[in-house]
Amino acid sequence: MEDEPLIAMVVEDSIEMLGYEVIGPVAQHDEALAVAAAGGFDCAILDVNICGGNSYDVADLLLSRGCPFILATGYSDWSIPRHLVGEKRLTKPYSSKQLEEQLRLMHDRVVALKASR
Image (cartoon, rainbow, N blue to C red; front, side, top):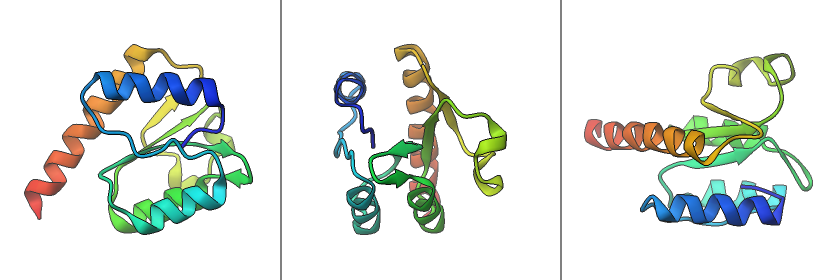
């Protein structure tokens, strides 16, 4: 989920070049919440600030479902809800290498989750 079109396109291209399938991008809070509720994906990258609010409730929904995600934000720990501080994070601005590293780690988490089910 990303509300800046140019950033969303770059991130989407980077993800696809790594061989992953992209659902989205989603730029509106209500749409992001609906997509998260519908499921059908293995993991997510959540921009903390999106059009219509922030993505903390989306993160909470994903947490309740055991769905791995990464928070993309320039905010420090003090501005993130306490229960989300320990979640994986991409600090903005981030490089394509940092994105790739986090995606690989998240992929490994998804594989481990699927194996344990």
